[in-house]
Length: 249
Image 1 (spheres, one colour):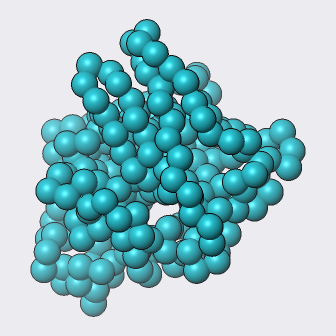
Image 2 (image 1 turned 45 degrees about the horizontal axis):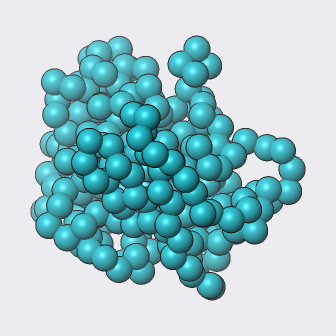
């Protein structure tokens, strides 16, 4: 697999803009390394992998977008680490997923719940440059990325059609914001790193707010509740069964 690093420089708040990305169709079915550089009120940068599914660019079609947030062990400046788990791992193994998949990397010593501004900027970038269906944008992540999934979805619930936090947690008082965002959470009952209660509290809070939240608990799993989750085709079918309300466009 050929991996090239490209840079896109864009701005919001009427600053400056430009791009050096190539034709969409040329990158179909590849997972490529990229960098976001955005100047807002301060510099926002993010290295990430981007995958375009088989058939992308062959006809005028909008595609669902999945953002994947890795765990704490994959932080750093080496994008190969991001391929260790989850959708990037499956793609690297040759599986074709019916989504555009964007997988950012969190810098060393930083924490996904504190990077929501960067993640929203990345979503904006990908949606502006690729054929994304804005009503089928999904969010998932594991461990630290599970916390990031809850945090980003609570901060910007209008962006997502459904979310899948795996062995993560969040701020219970913000869960009411997800009343209109379907949630499927996963956790290992014997998790020694992130207690099961972290997912239980959030799923219960969403349900109390009138939302749709289900929690799958693996009775014998410890912290790794993600391998079986991301290898389950039902997960992707469930995501694709949900669309954001068109009125939110």
